[in-house]
Image (cartoon, rainbow, N blue to C red; front, side, top):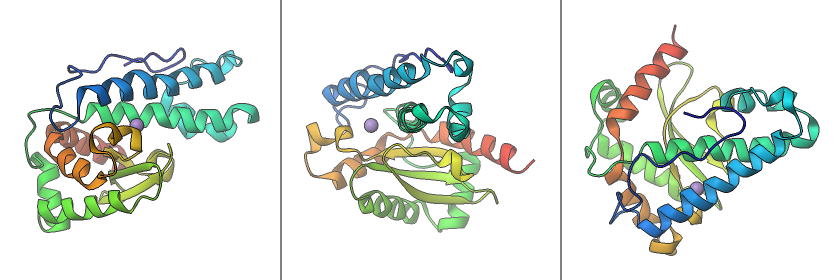
Length: 212
Ligand code: MN
């Protein structure tokens, strides 16, 4: 993974039409090639004036934004967040996908939420509650517990001390071409294309990191 300046928009790990019929090919092109590309270009543009920070990784930039030069702080916050959030969003999709969580994550979800269905309902409610642009997330908190949270714009959970497992992009650009105003249908279909094995890997990594 390309992880410092100049950031590069790596190819999707699947074909643009791979998520059909749940996410359409045109949306994938627009989302990856235009929206994510713009965040990458803007992040590179901000860092281009400051060679000192060009060796910093994406997460270093996100965690240490307050120590960056004042004139690029907002750009790095928004565009660095945009790069991180979109890379996670695209990486967690697969089709066909397991239709339920797997491994240790499945066991914890059963304990904390009672059932996968109960988790899904809470995740969906969270995603529908976002006013404007943002994301719903499944994260692990500092106590090692699963939590569903929402963030606005391109904020990330990293700076909140949370370790993200997966995210659902509910910016209109993520679904409007196909679903128009029907965010709820997009959310229902997103649950059908989650790479739960990868989320389980991320879960175990988060636990190792948070609970040494
Ligand atoms: Mn997006």
